[in-house]
Image (cartoon, rainbow, N blue to C red; front, side):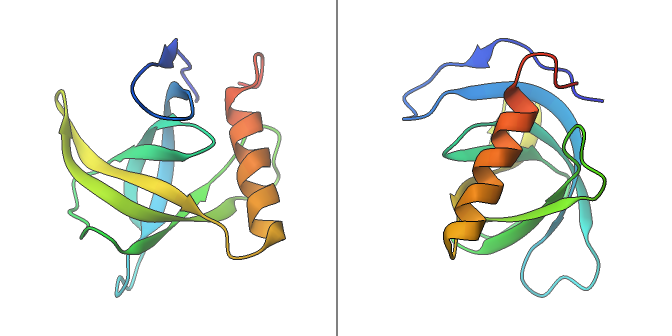
Length: 119
C-alpha cells in the first residue's frame, strides 16, 4: 500500500513524493531479486530503503507495481549514493532510460505513484 506524504524538499532539480511501496531490485550479479521499500520518487530518481548494500555507480533494475497496473514495471536506475537518511539505510538512484520507451515508462510510473488519488 502506498503511503504518500508531503513532497520531499531538497536541492534536487525534481520534487520527490514520499511513500512506502514494496520494491524488488537487482544489482549486477544478483541471482535473485532483493527486497526493499521505495521511500520517495520523482522525475529524476528515487530512494530505496534496503538491508542489502549496493555499490555506487552501478545500474540496478527496480521492479515496481504501480497503482492500476496489472503487471509490475521494470525501470533502471544508476546508484548515485548509498548510506542512511535518518534511520533508513539504502541507496539513491538516478533514472536511466536507454530509449524513448524507457523515458515514457519512467514518466508514467512517477505519474501513477504521485498522482492524487492513485493509491
